[in-house]
Image (cartoon, rainbow, N blue to C red; front, side, top):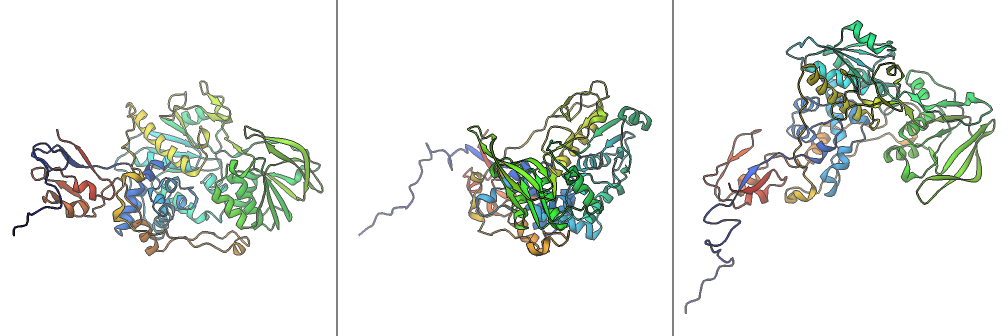
Amino acid sequence: MTTERRDITMLPDLATSSGRVGPVRTRMPIYVDLLPPCNNACPAGENCQEWLRLVKETDPENAWRQLVRDNPFPAIHGRVCYHPCETACNRGDLDQAVSIHSVERYLGDMAIAHGWRFNHPRNNTGYRVLVIGAGPAGLSAAYHLARLGHEIEIHDAGEKAGGMMRYGIPEYRLPRDVVDAEIARIEELGVRIVLNHPVSDLMAEQKEGNFDAVFVAVGAHLSRRVEIPSVDAGHMVDAVDFLRDVASGDKPIIGRRVAVYGGGNTAMDAARTARRLGAEDAVIIYRRTEAQMPAHKEELDEAEREGVQVHWLRTINQMDAEGIEVEIMELDEDGKPHGTGRFEKLAADTVIMAVGQVADTGFLRKIPGMQFNGDIVRVDPATLMTDVPGIFAGGDAVPSERTVTVGVGHGKRAAKQIDTWLNHQNPAPRVKHPIVHFDDLHLWYFGDHPREVQAELDPSERVVDFGEVVKGLTEDEAIFEARRCLSCGNCFECDGCFGSCPEDAIIKLGKGHRYRFDYEKCTGCGTCYEQCPVHAIEMIPER
């Protein structure tokens, strides 16, 4: 008896079929480098995916050198950046986002420990650029301009360089030796920093120094004023002045009970600092709800862990010898707070005002043609040049989110635009690759690996001094965390395409050089595309 042979899979009709394999190839694979969401979200423009890849390859120095192409402060950013890269990380939809900031800190700390230095420029252009302000934006611009071969001089009113990195961020978050080390590396590059040098006449300063261009990067060091009736104004201090005094080594007398008025990150820092200065009770008064709070959620969480209490929907009405009177607020249908006419009394020896800061741009108002919107300078959003040719501005002085990372990103952008302007070139438009999203990935390759957790001081140990709260990763932890990166949209040589190709149409080019297709053998079946876990291969129509 003869049994008819039947295949499990129906044979295709090669005369009419299309797609996977046919008599004529209708599509072909190509390798692509797409934009990972972490890179896209980074205000400093870091290539996070690439330096994480180099950490995976246990090549930390080259990882650091890749990182500092964009950001000269990895040890600082690894501590104080609010890491929007991690909010955007595709891995967050798989298990937990990659702890990019902790690996960045690991590289920054290693660079300090090993004394790694920046490569000096090969040429000197002969151009001189003046930078006003030695904060994150000014130092970043100076760094990138120096690497381009320009001669840079920074003028700053402070006793030490660093701006808000030094005087606005408490030492328990950012140790000063870290700030000193990363600024010293920029000075070693050839940047001259002139301290205790406030600028009152920018045009005269530029002319006397024979500077070809100027970058204004003054910080928001001035506190906004809110009038609160008080019988003793001596018990009210500005948060910016308070944090600056503490950072300078002073220990203000604030009493046992401190109230902080405001809901931003500065308010959280002021309250946590007050606890370290001996305040037994530190409360934050905020006129809106937690959902409307401008402070980052993690800052609030850390403050509450250290014993800081928050009174939501409250506003300070007046202060007297016994404490403060606060009015209870409620939200209207538009979400705006309004007074209810009901009041409470809270004990407070000192009130710290943290209701916002303004940029110290008054010295620019005498320049003909300079345009302002309140305290900020009007600039071209693409070039960061003001209405006065040759004068650029960034950081807190222009419309933006006022963070260290945004300031560093502005400095990098401004440096490129200043270089373009000095060389009489036309600005080139920025072209980005398409962003790779979670659904674009083929996640068969990756397992479930929760992220490493940085060690922290117990809350009871924190408030006794200004010791650093969060600790760094070990070498093994940093490499493990880097290996959690999904390398979205960029080949990391997993050999998935190479091993799956039925026609041997993929050629390995050696470690670090990826692969290429042999289109004489390729049938366009798409197996390589389906096996690539990171979407580094696209199938395109055959031409």
